[in-house]
Length: 307
Length: 268
Image 1 (tube, rainbow over the protein chains, first blue to last red):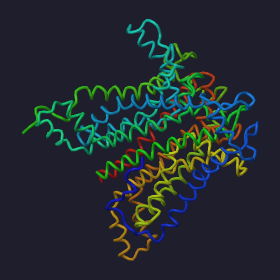
Image 2: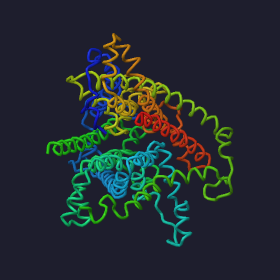
Image 3: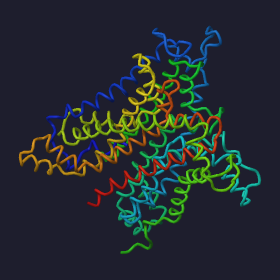
Image 4: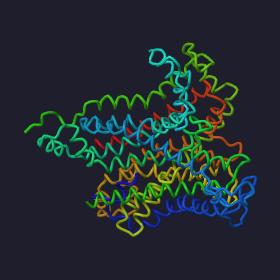
């Protein structure tokens, strides 16, 4: 996501150095006002008191975070115990996103290798084929997935038709459906960075290993895999991070029992059960989690380049 | 010495790739096929018909969909245009503005909407508009979309600008073109493929956005994705599949155009 542009190249110049303040002003203004400031205000809101019909009362309170982590009984006078409900929802989200990431890796890595080893003129066409579905409306893709996986949907009918199964598989409203939905939503994100890494890989390294009698799969595991690791890490992050906060796949495919962070947050801002400070606090916790992952991977990536 | 076998070939990887493409396309193809189903039930196949497409435009829900579609397209056109202008200027500063201290920060800021989870952006934007007392409606959707579309416009534009050597503008300026003139007559025309490609991607991102729109839209305001989501909550109906297929078609056409435009310069 972040690669390239900041590192510059031969095309870099200072032709417009004098005007850069004015050139950057619109971008800075838009993003500071519409992204950075809102996140700051969200942080403030997470420390306010809830208003029962949605919104907040401007009074400082730890209530939202307290409610997230501790259970003080129905009347709030018992000694605090750890509240597992929300931690479990976060844990489930991490687990679902993790499974989806592994599925994407299992399918995406071979695909990326295959595309990167095509003739140079063919590669853009393959890459394009992989990216098209990403640009199709996520909602429509998720609905399509639900349509496909339904109990009496085309997948079950096809499997029944060829006699692989005798009873329709119940996939919708299970964890598996959410995992498949997330996997399907973000699979292209796994393929692209790995493809970029494998394309840059110098296959004479593989040949050198093979000349030293390394079997084919050893070459893959010991030579190719370490060399393209940054691409793999990038792909995993690009799948894991959006999966973690996704709303549509768990909402449409998972049903009520497979609640994830996205649904928890959404619920706080819809209807009468809303608790804005709590929703803001849950969003802050999610954002912190994501930033930790991004910082960690940036450090890893930096170390890799320093080597 | 030649290798005993071609190390670029891994047995089975072709099959996985084909499987991968099958997974990616199967749901889309199936929904497209079923949108032409004559039956009012989504399970039975009753022959080919355009019935549900007609229903989208003239049926009981048509007014709702037309209203949502109009909102969606107006917002997408304005948001993509504004985001593309902002992104073009930012790319010029970041790639043609020499070295400066805030360069990396500027790039980070531009790509920020890609790193913050969408639901967090949505919550933050909703709270922001609430805090400053801004009534929710079409305008709030538009503002949120402009910010969110910037990185999608920026990436193809900066990729294109990186491929244009600075010597072109320098030559123009050696011939006494002002900086503005060099920008308008030399850099901008060379940038066109990147700008068009960035605009198209920003357009699709805005047209397709559900999560942010769902949070910042006012009561009663709908765009196509929120209207579809509302309808899907009551069950997948055939007219939803017809609408989905049309939206899907628009996305595919736009991405293909964007790809063809950005490819043209690679072969130039």
